[in-house]
Amino acid sequence: MSTADLERDASEHDPDAVEATADALEGIEAAPLEERAGGYDALAERLRAELERSDPARAAG
Image (tube, rainbow, N blue to C red; front, side, top):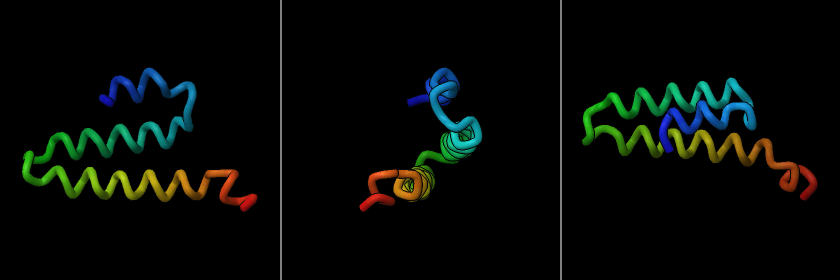
């Protein structure tokens, strides 16, 4: 998924979260290739944690 995809789908999502994710991806993609894996891992963990906090099924559990 590119940042353009994120911007196109922004109307369906929290604009602040979309912007933060797009900014994080831009930063990761600007880094040298050998340094990107850690950035992608950190972003994935942050998104996973946000999803778990916002999942209504987990709150009802």
